[in-house]
Length: 140
Image 1 (cartoon, rainbow, N blue to C red):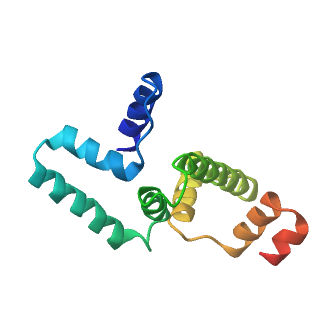
Image 2 (cartoon, rainbow, N blue to C red):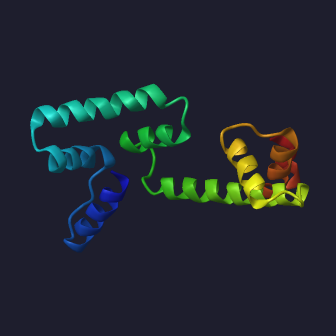
């Protein structure tokens, strides 16, 4: 839905029409996809229930919920992706530095483990040191 929304927003800008919120667009998208009101309502309910189910487990779902409720700017998701990619690259470099004899495959497996939420203390300390000034890192 995000990728289709980007295209839709571009068309709105070209036609000098105001953009829809993600919530508004969700119904536009479902209408274009299914066309029948009962299916649109069913899918909208499924999306909302899915968000309620996973909002506390997945940060991307929590952000989607905030954007859907218009509590957060839609473009913030691009910042989130950038930060996530930057952190993954940083952790990969840290792993390569700590384990220089490990293969690329082994490093990737270790990175995947970290991305699943198993991060060692030394890693998050180092991440904070790299991302924040010393005083702020100490507080965090």
